[in-house]
Each structure stands twice: as C-alpha cells, then as structure tokens.
Length: 89
Image 1: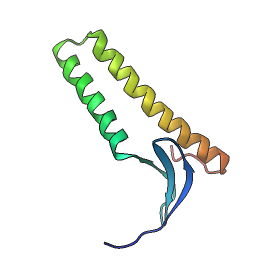
Image 2: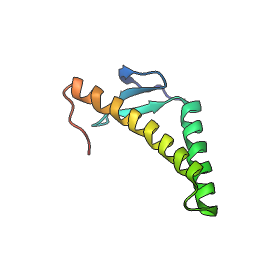
Image 3: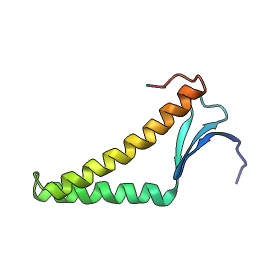
C-alpha cells in the first residue's frame, strides 16, 4: 500500500471535502455506511418503480435520496466558495 496525501478542506457529519494531490478539483469523501445506505435507498426505489411507476412510497424514497445528494453537493459547493475555488461544472 502506498501512502498518498490529501488536504481535508472541510468536514461534515458524514462526509468531507478533500483535495487529493495532483487533482485540479476537490472531491467528496463519504463515509462508507452513508454511501451504502444511499445506494440501498436508490436500489429499493428503483425496484418499486419497476413494478409500479407511480408508487408513492418509491417516489418518496427517491425524493429522500435526492435530498441527501443535494445536501452533500451543497456542502461541497459551500466549501469551494469559502475557499475561492471554482466549481468543476
């Protein structure tokens, strides 16, 4: 295993914004359990929507997962803005 360096720009509850050496833009580092829970939520919603495209429970799950992803992205964007880093998108 090689050692790599990264600068933690900001830490949140279940994620951090991290700048890897040699990368132009920072990334979002999610806790593994947080990422796994988000993925399971998306998979569950997809499974329900395949059976019934209008399933309100599936749409609620999907909305919740989207909200979580939006919170991560908002944290990322705030961190970049505070540090004067332009967004990569």
